[in-house]
Amino acid sequence: MPQGLLVARVQPGSIADELKILPGDVIVAVDEQMVGDILDFQYLTAEDEFTLFIQKPEGEVWEYAIERDLDEHLGLEFEGVSGEGLKYCTNNCVFCFVAQMPPGLRQTLYAKDDDYRLSLTQGSFITLSNLSEAEFERILRLHLSPLYISVHAWDPEARVRLMKNPKTGRVSEQLRRLAEAGITMHAQIVLVPGYNDGEVLAETVQNLAALYPAVQSIAVVPVGLTRYREGLAELRSFRREEARSILEDGFKWQKSFRRRFERNLVYFADEFYVLAGLEFPEPEAYDGFPQLENGVGMASKFVAEMKEAWEVLPVEMLPREVYVITGISAAGFFRDWAKNIVKHTSGLQIYIKPIVNRFFGSEVTVAGLLTAGDIAEQLGKIGGKDFLIPRVMLKADAAVFLDDRDIAWLEEQVDGRCVVVENKGRDYLAALIGELWEGDVG
Image (spheres, rainbow, N blue to C red):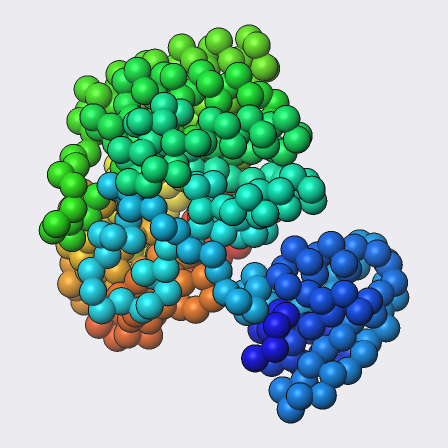
């Protein structure tokens, strides 16, 4: 395949569609400048007029003169960030989730990417330790921002111990260079008992805060452990009293940062509140949810959306029985809401079905890592009724679970109809009652 970007999809009705650009075409140049990756493409197509050079599958190169409004998208989606593929991670983190995956899954699940281009375009976290100096200079030169960075520990010895790569100890220098260049950063700390908690965590949070406003958010998430850890470092999950202590320190930091920066700056994953047995903060505490996809604030946002939709929930509806499939950590929340909804309405029965994760191990309690096999085994036959699953259980571009079984397989196993729901409170309420309703909120 030629160097360039392979077109994977063309959005219907877009400029690319009108020009008959097709999946399988390769963008090789813009205005006679070679396209090496997605960043080249975005930079070179930032004007309202330019010429695309596209190589067709049979080898011919076609020219397309483009004129468009600056806010008008071309409608191209690419197979990857570059013709050479992704940049992969060479760290050996003691908590690496990929290293804890069982054999036999689809190959893409074993890929450990550490690509700054994905950080910019998709919000993926990078460690900075796999960047060459030329790549770092490119980030500074093109002012690639925002970046999502896995910091884990400010102390170089603690970070090297966590990540098993001597290059990882330079993170403080790298973060300062990015901050001095005005690069916006969102930092992540995967917290591991005995490695980067306690004083190491406090030091990391305070040093990151010193880089504000370049550092716009700091997420603290607990280590995720599966049952596939043979030959790996011995790790454990946080206990309830430890989670409470971490949050107590966090509340003090947030109070200080709120006074200094008018924002909490440091935010804790929903799992910490569940583990500690504490209520989720109000949505305002998350300052716009800068790390929502990292599981930080999802529950609070979901509750707020449920409350808003609740105000216009119909009282009367057709008789209906529905199952809600969720992970262990969210089961209590859904049970409480189900009781309220059933009291408020007539003709509706809701069955909350928390699924124990036997595939990865019972310590993995989030819904997004459940498999079709575990759901089928534990749900059983439901006699043609509906069951709700959140979209996060499925592959991004296909109705396939982590164990490579699809929705059709699961429906057949449980004798039910699967309803896939976005992780929004209003969407869950609509799916529960099986219809939209008057006064429906957007």
